[in-house]
Image (tube, rainbow, N blue to C red):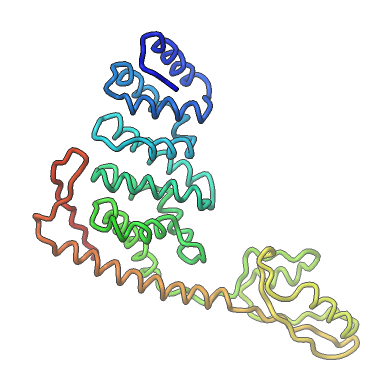
Amino acid sequence: MLKINKSFQNVLRYYINHCTIMKPDSQCFSTVLIFLFKNEKWSLASELLPTLLEIDFIKEDFKSCFESVIKIKSKNTSNYIKLLNVCIDSLDYFLGARKSVSSNNYKLILEFIKKLAKSGNKELSEKLSNLNQLKCNDIDNMFSNTPSILKQLLDDLKTKHENTITYQLLTSTRARHLQNVQAAGPPLLDWSQPNAVIQGQPDVQHFLRSNQETFIYKIFKSVFDARNWVSRYSGKKPSDGYNFQTEIKGTGKNTKVILQKNREDYDFKLRMYSALMAELKVLTVNLQALSNKRPSAEQSNLSGVPQKVQVIQID
């Protein structure tokens, strides 16, 4: 257990200096960070925390950063605000380095956003809502079965944090993204399957990647050959990026297979588009309701000083 005493000061200074030179152990780094925040009134803590928070490691080690901030009691000190700011940078770095987020990592993100929401810090909330990687994640998952991080956060924060500036700014960001989808209009029917890969079948692969709807394949010597081919290649193959159904016609050397692309992906996008437009309608109503609130509407920040709720409006 770390303790405040004079003999420990030099060791702690040496450790912080070591962290600026070499990558530290995550657990040790987190323990020291939590200890210094717990004893922030200690003169050495005030001296070392700014240095510790400027080390690139804390931004690059998402798990250590977020697990630490969740364990640190909320306060209104400059170092704590800086820690929240570092966490936002860490989140941007983290989301930019991966396509998906595990449930455990999402829980860390959610708990951090709750702390940020309770802080009432408008500047940091604006920085969060404008994160480039949060935007990219949201846009990339608009027509996906997996909701974006932003969509999940809004769903999970709504019950207890709907009236916070953080929630309102995140809602406004999501609404802007949905407005862009609306401006682009409903998905157009596109038969192309650009990621289709079907080894050893260049003509079929070319057809699948094109915008052509059907294709007649005439390479078969018998119905038996055609059935074997259909059994091997036809159907929905997500790992190979294609989806088509077949019909065998003819006999002997006149046997042919008619390939018909399925429109499941297009129908799915249409359903998603309708759901997204319904969501936009709800968000627009909610944000309009906020804009109609009396100017005296307030929320408290960490210092206990009332802070006016920002009015957000959607055109």
